[in-house]
Length: 288
Length: 181
Image (cartoon, rainbow over all chains, first blue to last red; front, side, top):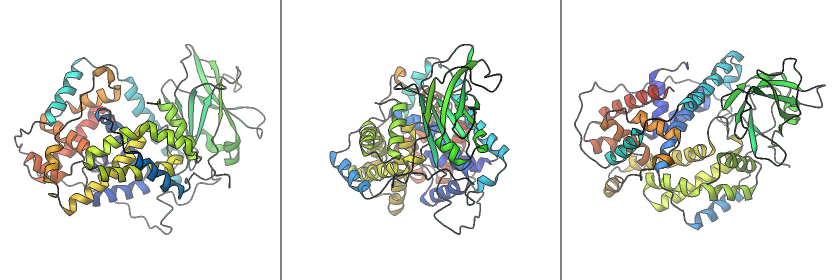
């Protein structure tokens, strides 16, 4: 469980819902920049609530809007993340947390998604609920309820002495590798967090292999043989801190490969099939 | 509409400064994002400004997108919607009554989707919202779709702002429990 009070949780939820006032929104954004777990909680709320956008009709903006965007980006280079640091940046408070805390955090993310995935078709009354909800928005009938006075959220404010203002607000760089067959559709998407070297694997196109397991390997000319990064779980997301034992250069230049192994993964630490899907981290540094 | 995996590809290319990929990403997502912010801002000129700022932010921030944490369209829509909320919060603090007609117009609702068109995530969320008391359901949906402040919601529901605050807080905690967040 995340160690947040109901006040914090409600604050994160109301930020995503949009009902905070301007000052509170700034406060939440400040908290997000210094507290990665809190930021993840806000992101999770945004993710859940954004399903509602499916009900919003599309509206084409005028063509001039694109012209203005093009002009605007012409003056700004993409702020692509820098190369993986060998040492975690000293300014990010979460980096100093013990590795176990990272694991708890990521497993929670997995649990979230696994939960959503486990959820199966609801009874047909969902349609009726949705239609009713939409109809009710237009209805203005209201009976006041007797409720206790509000307890205004009192967020736990972390006082952080910021000596270099620009740095703590910068989220750690994320590196992406798309693992695929040559010329094929993406099968897995590997994301590496630049600061913690934690990685997640998202299954996007790979078909399940009954009775077998997908296993992820790191292949580097700096290493004598492929190193297992573990079996990719049955859920859509797998996250691990395994990469922390490799240096940044190895991580940046390695080929990431997925093999099909016996259920539960390779028994002897060596791959038993040719790589089925491979990819490298996408070079994120501008060439000049 | 491109698939999420295709959008992830495009965002990865945008992170490397690929302007053609950015144009494709814009073409694939602009109408959805514009629809979302126009509902909240209710003014074409403001919505266009917000969309412009949002896509510049997407261009600059593509390297920070983490496909392990959110879907591409969710990430992009959140950037646009947050910007719209920021704009509307600053405006309503200047004058809540600036556009009295806006609240009537905003009673319009999104068209219901056929069930087969809903994602599992939407059905699940609506099931949880549907468990709230009817007034609270309206409160949450008006807040999300129209970007209304607590003050605007209090006026709509003819109730003190503090009561609206309590309802919002309780509703979100109930939704959280129902979703298993």
